[in-house]
Length: 326
Image (cartoon, rainbow, N blue to C red; front, side):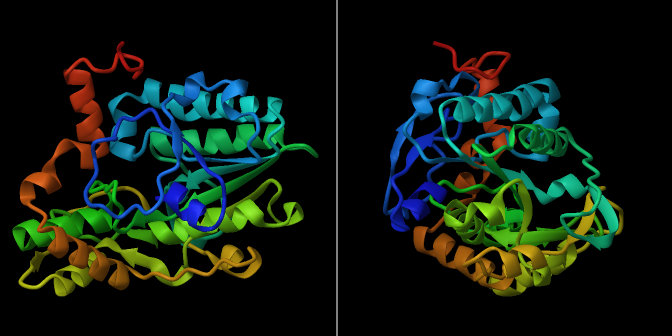
């Protein structure tokens, strides 16, 4: 999604992807497909990256459930691999490095938290985000400008779709089963942001004056887009015709946080969010209807990170360190 967005903005783009989810293609919606290097970030060399002006780095194991599957490999890829990529980029003379972090670094807080607030990572995935941010700060100098985009929880339609994030998952259930049945009480708060608004933030950081973005952290989203999970479920159930909703009565996810996005919406030139959860739900409904998405597709491995990696392990396509077997 991001690569095609940047091409539309007039940038020359090279992708780098090891290809774990290459067969997770939901619909034909990509107008521009850049040249892509098929490689694990742990093995990227200076020769691979030289000649580029910037790197936007989002090639990590995502998300929390996947991170807990093999925490040691999560740290090896998400922390070790990310720092290897950054050091390689710096050695190759690339002076701008935009890192996709996450608002999950805040973990749990009873306050609306901004970029100056304390981090409280509760999972291996979030802990790695904090460690990479800290590591990148040690590399920042006159010749190397890292920027940290702490994205809210993403949602929205994408040709290479994900169904293991809350809005997309609830929308998929609403479409395929006509029912959202929550086991938890849905009271935890979560900030949400559409994938196209994330792309917009990256594009703005890519061209912003160095003085604005150098070694700066940005929460990516909108302060009006903090939701309790039960409210998200209500929005989706009302958007998808014939969908019923039930809310449980027991506590669930320990992650519970609201985030301020005032900084990015006021200080990063060109950035304003354009999407809401309501608008995103309507977009997903339109896509599912157009492609006549089936329950089998919704539940298939490539659209859920944990399922797909588990499949690659069980089918012996990747080894214990998550490298492809030859």
